[in-house]
Length: 122
Image 1 (cartoon, one colour):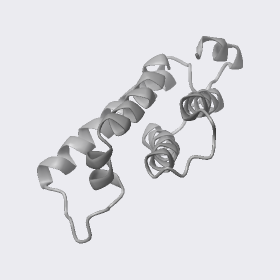
Image 2 (cartoon, one colour):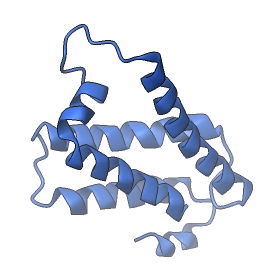
Image 3 (cartoon, rainbow, N blue to C red):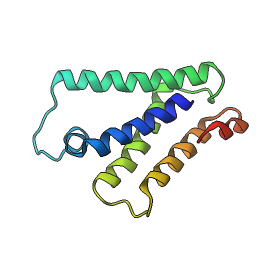
């Protein structure tokens, strides 16, 4: 569970440290640009790591049972949306870091089998 939280934080760090790369990769800022097969494979490996971490949290009874790939997609979509808004300077909150961290905690709390475990989330 904490590994998934760190993955979400790392995703945001990458985007903020590499905004142009992130924009090309995920925001389609270059019309007609098609990523290489190698790039798609790298993205698939990253998503597989997230899916595996979610499956591990399900298997160890930290997360509710469900389809790990779907749950990973939901996590990624929410994190991507928040990061994209921040990169595009459309984030209306005074402290984007605090807001993003609160988003991660809320997302993970919603997946917990045992709500008391939410205390471990920072």
